[in-house]
Length: 188
Image (tube, rainbow, N blue to C red):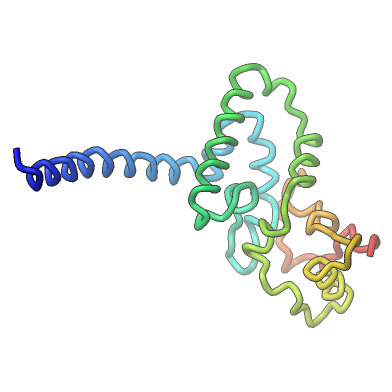
């Protein structure tokens, strides 16, 4: 067999194997990146219901920030996103089937996530946080987060810890609420 023919056959074989493998991987990633899939484990269901009642799912702008937006790196960082999603998925499945679900404490898990949540996760959606014409205090607090002095580093969750995974018996629409005051603002 000639070298050119052998090369063409190997490339063709590679395409026949790689394309379905890539397609199945992509399809699996898309299908498992929905809030409905995340809430299919019963221990995650209360967090899902709390998210549904939050302004991250219900707001006047119609923007929805789902599980993946906050809990995983940005999808454009493909390698980090893929490995992080795979790691969290395997960890959650193993925990679910090995009895970790019985030890699932929402308050502990919520605090653990808040302690490890990076400002970049919030900044994926909340980009223009310095333009708050009605609130000079919030603008100054956000400036401190974006341009911290050494030793005075703050994270978004230091002030905004009561927005998403808080149990509510109602949907909280911010257009019908009093202006938001971050509970951690007093620490500035």
